[in-house]
Image 1 (cartoon, rainbow, N blue to C red):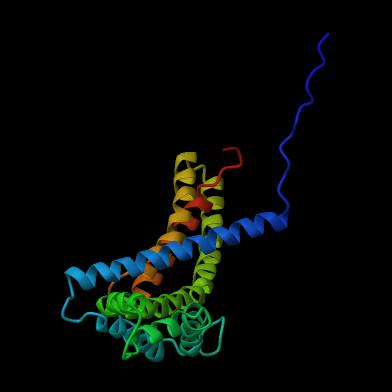
Image 2: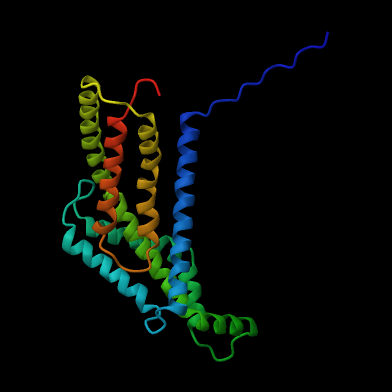
Length: 241
């Protein structure tokens, strides 16, 4: 008789590998969001705000920092949110452009020389033609860091509203259960599938917006929607789904 092939069970991932995989996914998402925001700014410079040019991104950065200075004096994560956001922007700029040598290379290209080599002449001509786009990309990177810091500081708001909504939803579930109300697994699954988009969309929208907007106009609506979905999911939860 032919021997049976041993059954291979898929190996389970450890906690460390799962955390590393999730971290890489987050980093990949942030890199894609940064590239997309730079491309959006370049498209705007080419077609929509030609007169402003690179000053459009500089004005957005100044306005975002102004919002933080005026309306975000305290946070549950850090003592000075505006200072934290500025440090994040400086950190991004330092590692991506200064320590990487990009800024030094651009300065070398921009510096005039009496008799430059042919290669350097071509590179300098290309740099001069794309100088505004290069500077705007560097400014958008700083703006991206500021907005990323704002979203990180807004996470406690999602957590707090989610806990309140969960408590309220469980109370509503008990009232419905003891009152003989109807149960619907469709509502539960629908609310459960909506939770992830309410967490991802504010990051995607806010990080890539080509205009300056107050953070509350993005964070608060999605935090309220997240809490609403938590409440609906908890109130419609069934023991057997």
